[in-house]
Image (cartoon, rainbow, N blue to C red; front, side, top):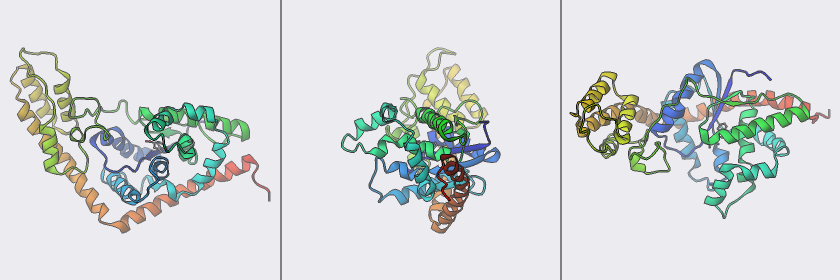
Amino acid sequence: MAANNTVMSGIRPTGFLHLGNYFGAMRNYVKMQEEYECFFMVADLHSLTTHPDTRELKQNVHRVLAENIACGLNPDKAALYCQSHLYETSELYLYLNMLAYKGELEKTTTFKDKVRQHPQNVNAGLLTYPVLMATDILIHRASYVPVGKDQEQHLEMTRNFAQRFNHRYGEVFPEPMAFNFGQTLLKVPSLDGTGKMSKSENQMATLYLSDDDDSIRKKVMKAKTGEAPIEKNADMPEAIGNIFLLMELVSEADVIASYKHDFNECRIRFGDMKKQLAEDMVKFIAPIRQKTNDILANENYLKTVMEQGAEKARKSAKATMDQVRMVMGLNYF
Ligand code: TRP
């Protein structure tokens, strides 16, 4: 089936987005909403597979919505909704579960990881996590799914479920593919020089969109820089290269060029450079944090956003489910 113009992605409601999420995912979403029919969903049901305690869920869902809107997602353009508000999800999940094999589900990398992390709670929902994710995508018959590398296996399984369904019952679903707007994703290194910025790692090495100005300054000033260069035009050690990468995200081009020049001339002062980066980070993050807090303070607004998103999602899901039931032969009247 030919690709359409529909984009779908899910966001885990774990609260607190960081700079890596912003440049990795959010900015992509914000661009996509201009040109595609977008469904962005908060995956609250998925979180039940590992976090059955729901006490903090409401707060987390609100935060993730507020941060996404503060980053530029527009609820009038994209459908921004909560997974649990779209009841059709449960129905399609059930049908797709009949087409998913125990063997392939057990082989999924994320399942094996989670079994290791939560050996006392290996529930059937955890096993069928990829089926629920496939449901999220297929229920809108989406062609494009902006996700990171860690979700690619789930996406491949989604294509398999779609194919099986189409072959068994009739063509309903396009096969969705991973999609990133523009060419490459920006690399956002962590501040301690070990890999990418991510929330599970060292909190001091991660800049959150909710960090206050002083925390931002403190974290940046502690960032690893390595040895100062001793000869001109030396190769750049990774640690200082990472500081430059972070500057590329938030600092002016001529400022970056002048520090590069100083590095090449062995005149660079890492302390000054980090001060500059800290101030540019503050300038970048502070407005997003403030906007997030304004939105969080307005529960009525959040409620309207969720209702509006759910309505759009329902309309799209209803159209799919009418076809699904028809081709499956579940129409007895
Ligand atoms: N599993 C995804 C993650 O952990 C979240 C998610 C749920 C998702 N449903 C989705 C992503 C549908 C893309 C499409 O990040």
